[in-house]
Image (cartoon, rainbow, N blue to C red; front, side, top):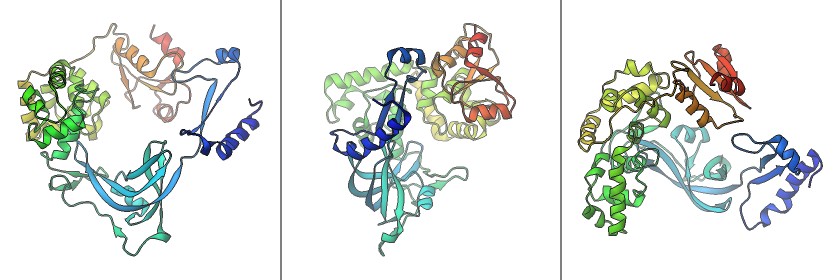
Length: 408
């Protein structure tokens, strides 16, 4: 029990110094709670957490190790990510042997070389990262780290586009890209094929049975039974999931195609404006006019659908009868028709997702960014940069209560 802020601070430091290391499990901080049920009731909850409890985190645990070499992994859009292979070291409850370096700009910022002694930590107690290079311990044998000239997975050309930091494999047939794309295509927000895991994808691609996402729809049970760990029931379950995915809404398909810069929200917006063939035919100028899109995303969408490979893929997907239909959600009212809302900060009476659904049900749009086209910004507790931008652009700002009144 603590009777004052000073006692809480004292406990925080004492726990870290005298008890943290002796625990049989990992702890990354302490939680301070109001120890009175009546006061807890008065304080209540936000949409995410109780107001009568707050967490205080300890600094992330760090460890020293050596970068033995740097390898390159290839993502679903061809982005090449440098990964440091380090001398295994125990940190924050796990043994770490790989650390992402994010991109080559980060390597340059750190001044990192192969062979360097480095300080690492688990960011958020989850993802290992390099915090600092100890240049005093740099060996004479240290090697500089250069971007690859060819893709490490397929030997294809590597390009760097001016507007992005990353280097990218430019080969659309790269097997490493295909594997990551298949996993993305099968993910829950996309086509929801939960039986299609990493080992299955490796087997399908390495054996040549699947050469693009459309190839999943041509699989037979015998194809799966030839892969390790597949029995009759598991094979049939995956085939059932693949068949069921044909009825997924268009936004799931758009998201699953793995178009660079297109996330779930943008996919949903596009699906409400176009059917798939209409989207494929849309001009870059028309796409730029969509509020949630903008010029960089519009260029990416246009480039994707106008590549010869994508045109062939769309025809194949059409042949297996996937849902290409526009999936605009019917509004229960047109009260907010033509108006765009942006929510920022913590709401008290509903989650942000619930608030956005309310806007859509009344015929409006919910966006994640503020622009001159935004009708209202609804500001909850601890609103930040979006609120500042709304004031700069003179966009009308509502409190949560004012929004609820407006939505009646």
